[in-house]
Length: 446
Ligand code: NDP
Ligand code: 2IT
Image (tube, rainbow, N blue to C red; front, side, top):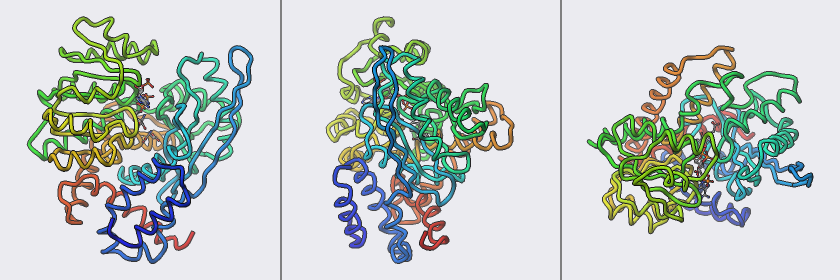
């Protein structure tokens, strides 16, 4: 980073948030690519927009006590970071995973500001979650936890204030328990959460949206570079919501997905992943990806999820978690001939990995742009809730496809306009920032 003001801002941010490496990583990546904007529009620094941008508007941390099936009291931590509401109510998922801490929620909330802006829809940025681990818990335990979590969270959210949704460890089951408790506490049926079940205000195609949107975005990027999914060999990390529907759409677009993973290991299936089997194991039976190989002749299981990037492929779709592709993994991908990486997960590539993609001339679709289809469809769910109406699957899917195409052109156009043609990461940061920054300027110091 060359801009002296941004350099100093980064130093002050690091001094104030010493134990938040993921948050600092996310901010650094954005500020670096905004340097040319600071040259062209010095008012963003002069008027204090950059200083405000890196400090959440509000950050809530709370105790979540609940009783497990043996009668013991368990205590988890709950978080909601309401990062930026310049262009709409805070919007962003809830993550339930033992690794959750303030740094992770703040990095996710910060990224969400620009992602949500890029969708073109009126949504601000926020994120929340807990260090609760839903794995191995009974439905009754998950319900009690969700009810306790919402018993505090409901005070801070609302359909025009803050609208949470799912993320890692939070799917349809959890959203159901959370929404039920909100409705009970507020005596109000409203669009306060997205990713709801179809019988109580959910949107068709929300479940599919992040994975499908990732492939729509990637398809645009590939076509603009005379490539396509058709006939391509694809590796997808993760086997959760994003990974499953990325696999489905990639296959529909003619690709062969040969590997998927979870946090313990990966399966390699040279004949192509049997997605019905993955869906049954993961969505219905809540089993491990290891069990896939036991039921699928020809598939191999390997312990250790990170080695999935050693499998030769044309296109890599990381759809598990942050920093899952290291420099070493990126080098393996490049040397095995991979020509495109598109991020379904949030910040799955380390900065060193991104440098490898650039040096190798690989196409790179950054998370903020490539996985924005999930939150965009959440915003479509909010619209349907406000209208008290529901669109068909085709209607929502068509809107999603158009949003991802517009988003691609918007990011590519901003990269070009600021002298970095082809750099979608910079373009996404710039285009996402400008709308939020202009709104913040309009408000004055607030
Ligand atoms: P799920 O909980 O449905 O699935 C997560 C998947 O990633 C699982 O296969 C999980 O394996 C694996 N995983 C989680 N943590 C780790 C870890 N520390 N190391 C290795 N593997 C891990 O979550 P989603 O599919 O919803 O989310 C996946 C990613 O996509 C996240 O980065 C999320 O922030 C991002 N995202 C999600 C959106 C959504 O709409 N859901 C929208 C945009 C981005 P295991 O089962 O073993 O834990
Ligand atoms: O990271 C994300 O964009 C999400 N987890 C989805 C957020 C949402 O509000 O749908």
